Length: 277
Image (cartoon, rainbow, N blue to C red):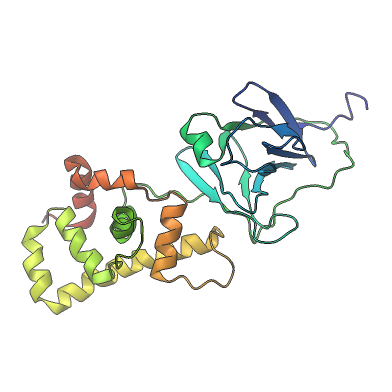
């Protein structure tokens, strides 16, 4: 193959041991701890023998979980996506499409230990793309997982955090989740709006109006989760499903609970929620 006909590099993969592999368009790279993987990773049994696949596609790369027993994670720019285990034989139905920058990929233990794969999307290069004889790993737009990030300095984030708080505190997930009036009342407490608590408790019109505002944010969270394909098509987005997704994909984390006792963060939320006049 001549230099002019060589396929362009889509992604550069660097393992914690220093191994570097370049992935081109229409190429697949299987990684895992087994000897039959294209990229063998020294890891404990928290990583499957055939753990995941990285596919080069036009405009970026696609990472998917090949394991039937273990989750994979992908992190970049404040996002974290959990790629759940495959449930049936065959090709993975979902994954994460990477368009630019560097993404960390690996098991939970690999990420915690600072030993993930580093996947860097390379700048687009001109010239013809050559066929490699391997079928492309193109993402299915209906099932591809896209990152979901909530800006902490928004009302939406506070609603999500208060909604998730019982299960962040209770990992058994037996604690009941708050409904919109309870989230609304908790928002009054967090933002130090104690002057409105008595009104909330005694004025049904005010209480219903504030709960309705919270309800609109809840609808936005459901819509974002659905658009990004973070649940199977047709899944009913109950409170329990939505909160489970927010926690499992690290959109809201246990560490975020610390914001509730951060005076400066709470003050910013107060400015967002309440008119001081």
